[in-house]
Length: 65
Picture 1 (tube, rainbow, N blue to C red):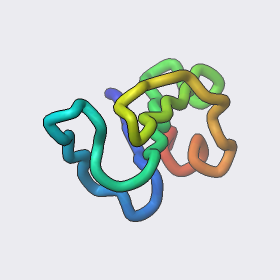
Picture 2: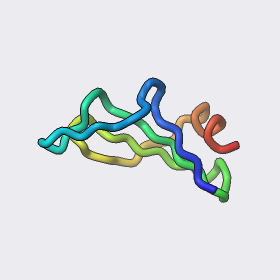
Picture 3: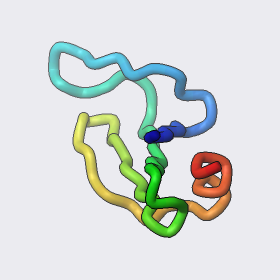
């Protein structure tokens, strides 16, 4: 089981022909069967770059049930 939760209000990602995504930065919190202590977060920038981030404890609690 893998759970994924995105930033509030971002229900989809649309890429432009330039490789950027429409809208604003979006954060993802991922959790798997190993539980909340192993949760991770990723941020997708408007330019289309993906990077690691420290997971927010409230998002981890909501994602890793």
